[in-house]
Image (cartoon, rainbow, N blue to C red; front, side):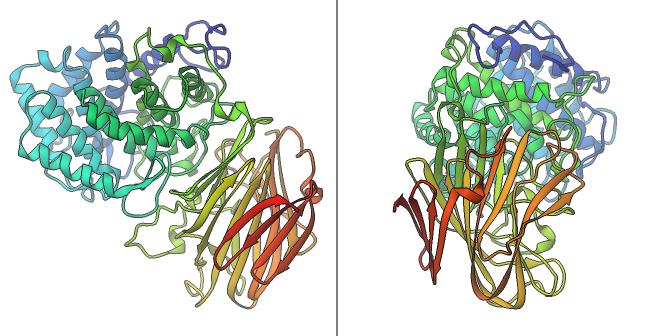
Length: 632
């Protein structure tokens, strides 16, 4: 593969006709990335101080992060090989464990920071789960050979996760994982039981159905479902040999993968949506875990196609720097993709993808011939009512689009502040080929209500329903526009939005109520850049001025240095309806341009009827929202 900074085996196009990747490629990537990271270790091996800007948690926490997250990759690598450790990885991690736990909290060259509450530089709690899981996976070859004193010190440090308060989301699975390890090595007690019971209780309350968990008490749905909320309980049950727990959590994982498996493009990219996207190919962790445990609707060949496709996607696009380190970003470095908690070692949560290596060489995940990924089988539109998402995949160009009518990452206790607008949640649509524009640039895929020249953002999203039929689907929501400048909100102002996906087209219908006189709305489409081979089209059908325009986003996206965004403008006063057709396609425009795909639009109060060129009619009603799509 071009641009990969470490040696890889020859491609095997017989068993892997889509990616050329085998289990040996996964091992080689793990080995190469670990060798590169260990060049930055402290003398005692307790911290891996990778180069780069520090996170908000500080340099020492970042060094622990380097140790813990690479340890997870090493543990999957060695455990999957039955203890074979050709590069002496476990000896390094055993030495680092001894050094880091000798005097925790001391400001010396090796000591690990203490595990405290999440709001007191709490990042070490996150890393405790990777340390615990690494120790559990490698117990026969590492933990069982440690001095008793080192084991006691490690336990005492890990118990900090059980005695302090996690963040109110997936963090509760970190003490759950720590407790699971301690119980697995005969060190369980009432404290470990409480931590695990509390996590199970919360996880049950966060389950929304259809295989989807909210990441906390609000409506945050993103890749954390796969690489955290499913991964920790399913892997815990699998390692414990707990058939009842595995059946329970595995059934939810299977349901999740029925939709999530479609969120990878034909090029291997996951949908660019949500936070912590610098974890990159960790997005395939749930796919590998499903194949490992048998709790998946995907065949072994399709599972490997998706997982290896995602790994290869990032290998080929500069995710690893020239010296073999994972950069902070998406393809290469990209500041706008990051969160303040991201430090130089944060990208190594990508290590979770190596859970696939727990499947031995003779497992069907590695022996079956690769099969097409779901996006490569046929055009498909799938509604996911629990998270309020609509998935639209087109086989011809391999693009997957995600229309967001339910995930906002706004906590139930939080105000709808426009200052906290997050481009990775607030936009109407995301895809495997595009990223959202940065906060300071023109917003893509956005409906803004402008009052006195001040534009609005979408923060809290209230789902209104979702569904799908043969080749089409819909999702709807409403939001209260909030403003960065001037008054924070306009009393009574509300926007109801419906997206109907048909083939490559996106019918977007909005009803604005409570708009003051002189207000206008601005609808934007997909952000694309020069040389990408993408076509972004946006055509007004009703309630917009006749002439579309274009906005520029000089900061670009994670996919392009510079971008353009199509724009429509319409007048709003009181109650108004606005209808447009958007399309994102690759290489060439859609077979029928959006301007010709629809032959008629009729709006009558709460009823909008759109007639397509093939004679079918999409009817969108409000009060309550309903959508039909059938022959006229």
